Image (tube, rainbow over all chains, first blue to last red; front, side):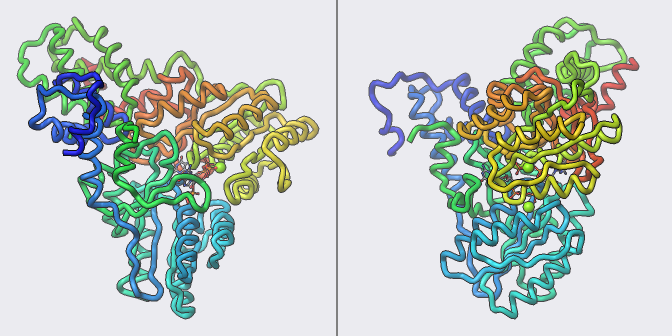
Length: 289
Length: 309
Ligand SMILES: Nc1nc2c(ncn2[C@@H]2O[C@H](COP(=O)(O)OP(=O)(O)OP(=O)(O)O)[C@@H](O)[C@H]2O)c(=O)[nH]1
Ligand SMILES: Nc1nc2c(ncn2[C@@H]2O[C@H](COP(=O)(O)OP(=O)(O)OP(=O)(O)O)[C@@H](O)[C@H]2O)c(=O)[nH]1
Ligand SMILES: [Mg+2]
Ligand SMILES: [Mg+2]
């Protein structure tokens, strides 16, 4: 198709052999795809092509197309529901970018004409509330807070009551960062979900797991645990503006098929982009487009 | 998926019944598995490659005692080498150069790695264990409420923070911290900086300017222990641009395999000084190479077994 015809005639060509496959595997491993997934992806493109002469560009295009094909199925924007309020719970390990992502999302929804309320559910970390208040100001959205050290579940409950009373379109709930192997903190999260459901059995309508692109294979364990305990409905990957490629998303797509709603590409309010499978695949394989 | 390296190697060596010495072929086969195990533990690819090469030399021809299997023997050799690389020649990783008061310590790293938290943990440690008078200053003019975060932590641990002056740039704050540390009779002052990408030209130049003003006795790179393949870029770029003297690995209380430790050590040649083991102010410990080695390989018992044999 398009790809095989796309290579320029004057590019040097090599026979596709085991050695070449191994170097392709390594390219993907170095992008955090993980050994198993890298092996699978390269063997998919090798099928029926071993021994053929290909150029470096052609082979990268093939790889990128294969990755984009896998990722196509999970590239979906955050779904909107008619419920008032639609509750968006944001979870993840420490420092992954939850609070920043909430600020960015709130700004986008506000711009789309929605009335948004944010609840500062991180009642633990120093200045977490102040940080979110700055984001609320930037986005022009009110932030509901509770004193440091208070129960995040009861804040979530109060926020639900208030957002319902005000007829807000969206309620976004920030949570404290927690490592997925901390049973006590995961139970705290499960409690937040239970309390929200008392007010609306359908809520939270979206539970976003925020993953940091610099994270390696532990992202798989994170997703598994947060999915089990908090019913994750979609992913956001942050910090893709750095040198990390976020290849673990391919392994995640394979394993869980959770939608990827957006990616973080900077620290400013507009630095949240839709997930574009082709762009992602090109960056991952180092393909110049 | 294999839980650990010994399971992997068990499979490889099952067909070998005779003990004796490890042949070149045995070693080669085994080291494919070692390489995969390291990559699964998030050791950066170039580092994993280099490591395997070093082990290959040591393992070929090594004697296998009767009471252990060839697989166990290889695990032991790999484990020992891993400890050797992780430990380097640092006698005392927890020791910081803080003579000549006031001694500046500069904290740098990517966004969200744990710099601010680690700054406060370190201040607490220096104050309580070494009786130092410590000042902390936040140079983070980017992240919302970053300065408030450090100030609150300072109150919690009873360590002074430089008063916040809105609108100052990081270099000016660093100068003010230096003056204040001198006038106030502080032994140590810690400079917490904003998170930055190692390819962000403007922010990397800014932290270089801060370094030139402060002349830090220690420049610590704070890295998330869950970091994957990107560890090499971060280590290389920060070390080249800023010149680090040590590394702190955070979030080692997670269930990550910690391969970033090996990548950091191998790429920078600088010691890993501390590990962060939680969000609380006392959750900072000195780096222990053998514990991290066992974790990267996903095992520990097997090594004890071979040691006894
Ligand atoms: N470069 C870059 N930095 C980001 C991105 N998203 C967030 N950050 C930065 O990452 C750091 C951590 O972000 P936060 O939003 O505080 O993360 P969090 O998950 O709320 O952290 P905790 O509440 O402490 O668990 C901040 O310095 C953010 O500015 C991104 O997409 N790109
Ligand atoms: N579990 C755990 N969390 C940690 C550890 N160190 C820091 N954290 C958490 O990680 C998150 C980010 O920590 P910060 O100290 O704000 O990170 P930072 O590098 O200063 O972030 P920026 O200033 O935004 O670049 C916070 O939620 C901390 O509580 C650790 O060792 N273990
Ligand atoms: Mg937060
Ligand atoms: Mg900070």
